[in-house]
Amino acid sequence: MYTGHPSLKQVIETYAELHRASHTLFRPGHQIDTILNIHNPLDRYRPIELRNEQMLRATSYENKIGDVTLKLIYEGTPLTAYLSYTIKHARLHFKHFVGYVGNEQYPLESFIKVIGVQLPKLMVPKKNRVIFPAFFV
Image 1 (cartoon, helix red, strand yellow):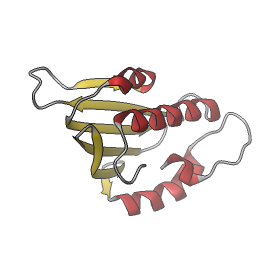
Image 2 (image 1 turned 135 degrees about the horizontal axis):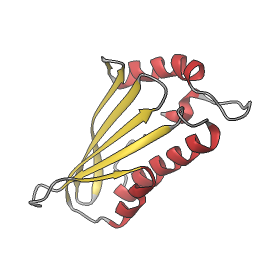
Image 3 (image 1 turned 60 degrees about the vertical axis):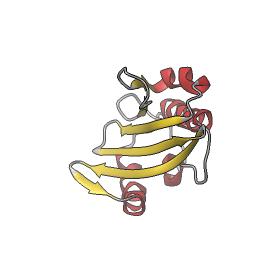
Image 4 (image 1 turned 90 degrees about the horizontal axis):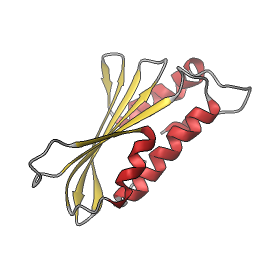
């Protein structure tokens, strides 16, 4: 996760790489899926929703205002994370984070502790490898 004010392209490339890494390291059904929503308040149409590799299509999106939401789904686990950003002057400003374990909601710091404990038990690697819990934050 970025601190500061990254561009939309930086955030998309980071989470697309996370998606690719999870598909390289973990068996099907235990991988991370990402969903990106972009909403421009000046646009009459619905928000743009892109999943996994499709997110890379939005790297050239150059909106000066709007909102971006990322949903991370840890397949095979009860873990889900939502990150939201506001677009101001073509830069993303972190707005909100919520993590869920089943129906229980956690703030960022608590969620990091929870996934640090639960991910190693729940994720099934393709081969025996060392996985660092912070890799998925």
